[in-house]
Length: 240
Image 1: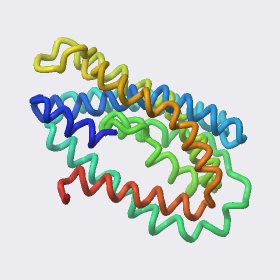
Image 2: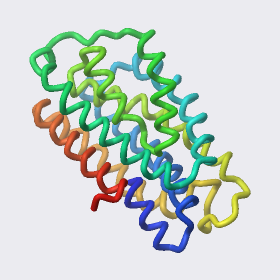
Image 3: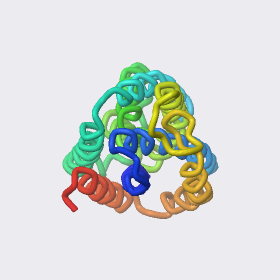
Image 4: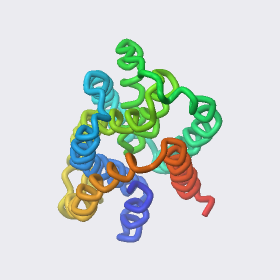
């Protein structure tokens, strides 16, 4: 959502600095109901560890509020490049580090709540700075550090994103109030018409995504996730 929204907003004649913040803030508002919908689908398949999700999500909420505030004061070029670099780094990390873990995926997840809380705030900051829900970081942490099987890591990540996105939404609204050059029908850096168009399709499709995730073997799901990250990262840093 972030790259596509950003390019569409630029085409409307909005300055890059404002456009990237609108893309980030509006994306987080789309993510909120989508995450709620997706969590319901994953929970039906018993793929959400709720205590982990609530602890991680609460810490991420505070971090996302701080991250959104920082994003409101950074140049747009830094935000755009940072987004691309982030997802490329995560793709490389997952490609190199997750493969040795495949044979352990049948094991029981380790719910280390101290580690989860410590990871939540910085993950939330990244979410606020980049307009992503945080799943690109939460899923690797759960798989690599806590031995979560991929399906449970995805479901728990989606649930924690509910709170993480909420913190970013508040940050982008508060820091965007009174800013000139915004699109019509905006509340801070969140544009309601763009949000409505994206949310109307993403919420029902989150249910389809949850079913597809549980129909795919974990190894193939991981490769799809990595391929998506590489594509999004390269586009945002301007490779193609």
